[in-house]
Image 1 (spheres, rainbow, N blue to C red):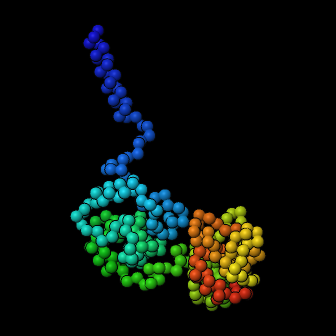
Image 2 (image 1 turned 180 degrees about the vertical axis):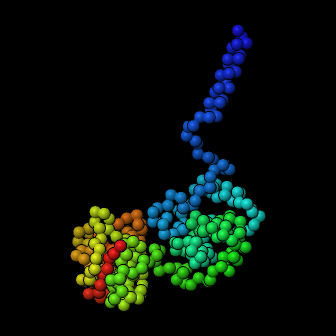
Image 3 (image 1 turned 60 degrees about the horizontal axis):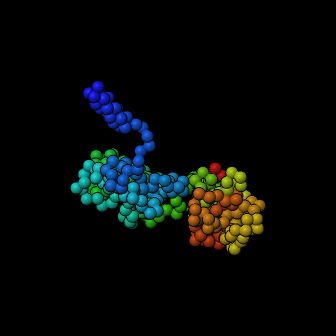
Length: 290
């Protein structure tokens, strides 16, 4: 009898151990020093504004991000190779790297100077195509190969006039003096007789307050204007369709595409818009299109 109790107790303990090993309950967060934590992108959780257009620098690095970076570094196939640039770096050299990768059509976003997930992926792609260790980091061998495969970036390539890539102009923009505004690329191109003079990023209205599409003319201008409906500042306003206007938006400058206008065409680069405001004349054409 005593022997049976011992056998039953032993079987019970073994079953409990087996159950604990196979249970599919929620996992606990790995500790900061855990080597099993999966590497995470420094731009994970980025807003829609950051993700499609740039390799943006995140806010404050978290402990888990630091652990992930350490885990990623330790997993590198060539840990003894000195990295010139790597994920998390920020410099003018990184900006040049990004501009060269864009020349090679491995990046579509504008250079930011911050080495994030998009730059890492582009470098890995370049390394794979050129028989190099695909680490995602730039060592001397990779950098020399990128330099020999591309040309020295121009000032506009290093700091493009817009974050968004400008769309091909609508045919209606090809004659006269026109603010050519693309909803698809979210850009405004100031054009004279088919030539692009300047470009800038723009934001439009929401579904409930859409920006009207079509061909318009600048009806009047006001350097300092406040909305009579929403009581918000509208500096450098150029009205083209009733109460809708091209104007500077501090909210757009601060929050980007996380917000929307009440139908106006918002511009976030105040310096560029100030110059455009001085150049545009009442009567100039405005084309808003997809």
